[in-house]
Image (cartoon, rainbow, N blue to C red; front, side, top):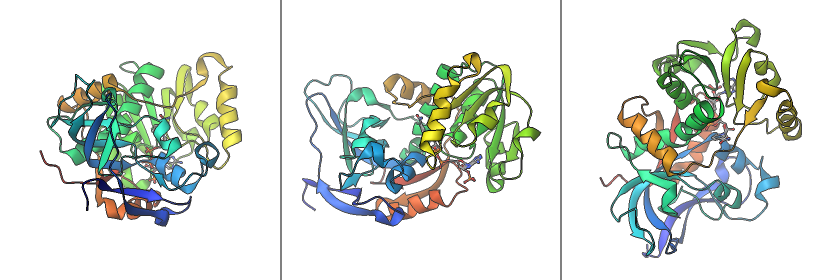
Length: 330
Ligand SMILES: NC(=O)c1ccc[n+]([C@@H]2O[C@H](COP(=O)([O-])OP(=O)(O)OC[C@H]3O[C@@H](n4cnc5c(N)ncnc54)[C@H](OP(=O)(O)O)[C@@H]3O)[C@@H](O)[C@H]2O)c1
């Protein structure tokens, strides 16, 4: 393959996992303010399934082919002339800006990404690229949700809905690191995994009625449905953070989230994460301190990205499906 070309995952229409394919595309050029990273590993996250399936087409439009992938771990291979804080040969991890997914002109399921240096930090010393990739998106989202949005305090009771997924598996660990009592709601096949991550209590979301659960100071919802039901489980000073909405009923779901904001302290807080270096650096520290551990379900090759999407879509994930793009050269 010429040096000006690279392998990347693309799709030409919205649809099932099989719309994804590996193609050769030009290697992206970096500007004087950017770095170019050779990607070792990226992951599949729940939002990307919805994006690929066309559930966000009103926001994403109909421009094809589209790239996919947001988080990445790799080696810096080029540094723009104005960049002073990142060096060639450094091993870094980061997430592309949120707008990347909506525009679709690039993605981290590719051999190279270009990015501003404030979107990366150095890779955790104690983790491989595959392991580091597994904590990035979920870890930064969980720190933002639990600390910055919910202001979770030691000793408080936290409920994580979707506790075995990419975000939930990190939220369980970070909730424990922040000193909370953590209850996880997950599928029956993953309850052992969620308990191993440190959850104090685990319940099967298919057989547990919300009314059977106790009250919580903080509810983190990664699922997007039944917001009203879970909001009722809050204590009078409780806080609910939602990171997803119901893509089958977007107007009703987003409408409810917006309407809830008029109900004072028990309003549902929604945010769309767009992490930068400071947040990655905090996460790396938690990993190096042993407060969070990697959550690798399965490692797939880039050419098998359709199978990776299908595997996540099938349910029962234990953390993250990883796409290994090029082998770790460290
Ligand atoms: N706002 C933000 O900044 C932000 C950031 C990251 C992600 N997100 C969004 O958050 C959502 C989750 O992302 P993710 O990457 O964690 O997805 P994921 O890895 O696919 O995990 C979803 C998890 O939810 C579980 N689940 C499904 N239905 C459930 C239910 N009724 N009750 C409890 N658990 C249930 C699944 O378990 P089973 O398959 O075993 O049922 C799975 O473990 C996506 O919609 C994504 O777009 C938002």
